[in-house]
Image 1 (cartoon, rainbow, N blue to C red):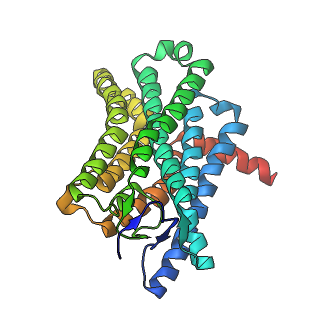
Image 2: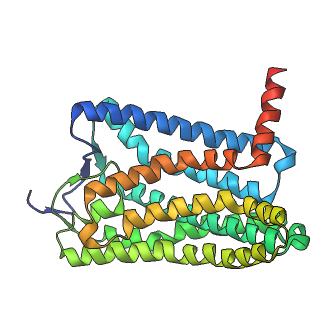
Amino acid sequence: MDAANHSALTFFIIKGISDVPKLRILIFFLVLFIYLLTIGGNLTILLLVCTDPHIHTPMYFFLCNLSILDMSSSTVTLHKLLISFMSGDRTVSLQSCFAQMYVYTSLMCNELLILTAMSYDRYVAICNPLRYTTIMTRCVCSLLAAVCWAFGFLESVPHIVLISRFTCYKSKEINHFFCDIIPVVKLFCNDTSLSDSLIFIFGVFFATFPFLLTFIPYIFIIRTIMSIQSTSGKSKAFYTCSSHLTVVILLYATLVFQYLRPVSMNSLESNKLFALFNTATVPMLNPLIYSLKNKDIKAALKHRWFKMIK
């Protein structure tokens, strides 16, 4: 297709995950099932934390923020895939596309920052347990969450503004199931080296800062755990941060494969698979990880269940 001028381009066409009709039907029901599990699981976490006073602690306060982000990121990215299958309309306006890109990147940045705040919470709980309640007060937790949300939505602005200033596209069709940064940048008429540089810079700024702030506390956490004499004490200390560490590793590994792979290994088809895992599977797994590996959540769930059946 001839290069389309930005001023004349008013919409994009979302290609989706697959062009095979039978495969599209299977993907639709699979994504719908995963999306419903994501909403149900994260809503359960939210309701449990809000209604059970025994788990009104900083750790679960941040877990509620994580659940809200998981539900929001899944909804922002998967809604077009589900709606386009039912309606057959695969078009998205230019403004809606950039808005979706901005909200998605902001939510992802927010999630990384909330995980960073949770890492600090685990650091205080394990390395300075006697002062935990005086350090992690309700005011401090609220301030940390507010900073994470504000910085997340502000950090994405320069990237989206930079991308939206490009005025030439090679095609209207986005080879993806939502407006992600990589497939949109691939449509630029400009030199592909510039596109690759933009993607790499975005990935570095998007993840490096939260990554360092998340994993540096674990250096001190591991050192503290190793200094504990009893085996049961080591196990208990590690248990308190195992769920968070599992979620962190899962999310960062997915983002690295999605955005920071070498150009020789980068393809839009594989990006779609990693993006689908990141936007559908990871938000579904997060509440399962925290509920299956957390005694407080399981106890609150049992208490709520017995209360309902009485």
